[in-house]
Length: 259
Image 1 (tube, helix red, strand yellow):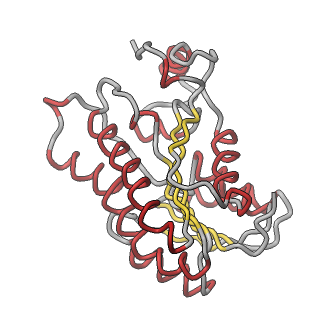
Image 2: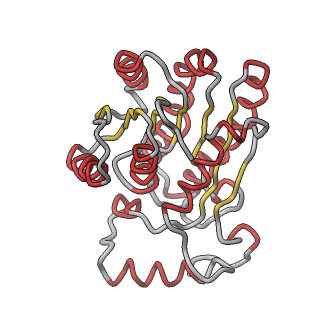
């Protein structure tokens, strides 16, 4: 699957699914604009790309999508002059039950997962119309079913799904496709941000417990999400838009919850 000379903007690209996307698309010939907040994480991502003998250096944009959306688009277009694919992957969560959610926590999660994504996409759309490009949003199975202790995150991802549907309808006549993938538990360093050591006993126990929530008997891998994103972003999927695609090991159909 070739993305040769396509300009692809990936948010949340310094780790997890975003970093795996960066490596995949670099190997497949794309020009990349990678957005994230952690320079030390980008050092690892760029090193991995160079390991694959990819000569093109990606454009790294240190930014917070909740406030820097104008600069992100400006730097991307300033570097490449066009945009073919936008992958809205950046997101985070602050755990907490409904009664314990603080206003500033609500604003931070919605600001990044919904508001920032909305406004960044709004600025990107004119360039995507010009290139007849497409958008892939990285949502979550938490948009499709409730999970305890994650109410704001669930709300934000449900909003992202409906954003996908609404935008797909609005942009269809302009030749721009909009789709979403909805992962269940993926073994990435996303949980580092929740204060967990990926090499610790707590994380290992949590992973084992979460595997039991998936009828296939395991959690997912970043590469499995990348394969779905690449399929949706590819020109061969030209008749596919407005799709909400679970990458979830049948988690959506399972009644099991984290204990």
